Image 1 (cartoon, helix red, strand yellow):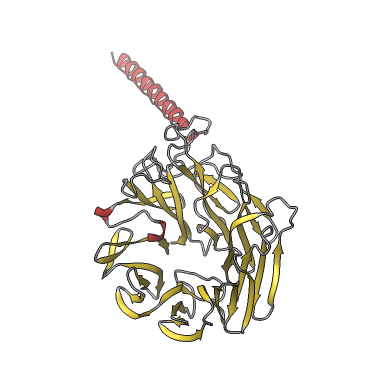
Image 2 (cartoon, one colour):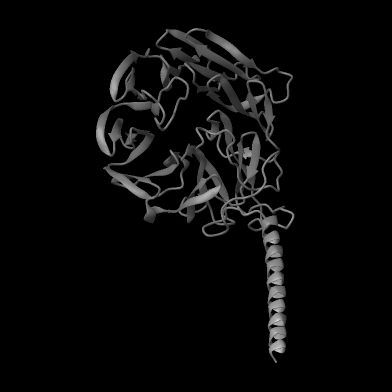
Length: 451
């Protein structure tokens, strides 16, 4: 009887082992089936974030990008808006009243999701949220006050309707520059309290000047950080440095400045009048002009400024204005080159690198030109907005979108292919020479590094 019990226990143990092996095999098959379909950002509590392929653009690819050689080992943060499947957010028939979600990604993983709407004091507008040091800051104006929040938590409320024109973290203090939505008035705040204010319009947002990286939003790692912004009151152009008037310049009456800045020791502004468009280096009394009606874009770093223009209507020209080198043309497209004809150009620069984003005249395709490369964007991809293009720690970054369709929300097969996202289009990010598609209906409109 004892031997029989031992045999029975052995049989039961063997059956248990077989069952466990079968269970493990089944789990392995299930896991294999799951891993063949990349996890994608579709909403809260769905998957573990973003996972997938990236590289040379394939319309069926989707996933995430992680930085290579990023800024001081920081993580790459992205933000944007996700809309319900099937909703055309470009036409926006519900005029901004549709329920949508503002999200924050950290190296592709979803770390924050916030509902958008009047009840939540949040808007989907791209100019009303931004990433600073890995955190998502949002602004919202009611009929009587303006609310600033960080990762969904309120920072301060200010009386009156204001528009945020710069947010910088300096020595653990939060500096914000705002302009009134109803009057010609600006206010600089520190941790919500009024620090400086005056009359006029803002021609350059609050930023950090280190001579190389215009428009920074944090002073981390800088020895002597200086905050600056530029205002225009009447014909008086004023450069404010650390909340004090650093220098001013009286602009000739026939000029209408629309942009100004400060890089290194160079104080400049861009203007239009009835006969020409030009850039004036106030500090060194340098002036460069082109004919009236020419499309110009300006981007400045490294103690100088780049001017992108279309001087004769059929060529792309990029010039560099610098106190030592004066004015020099750094690039001119050949008239017989494809992509030579352009409209709506945009310039970006970082140290000694420059880039132009142009749409080919009469065509639907776009191209990026850099110091030594031409990067044609794949057919069917269009910039979400030309404003969402530039350099991030030396790497070109551009928010694109792929047209939407009527084929559901983008179900994926085991091979990794997917249908077109239903709605206005799914986002594609160009970064580190890679194109990566995210499988949801909406857009990516912000980026930055953080811990």
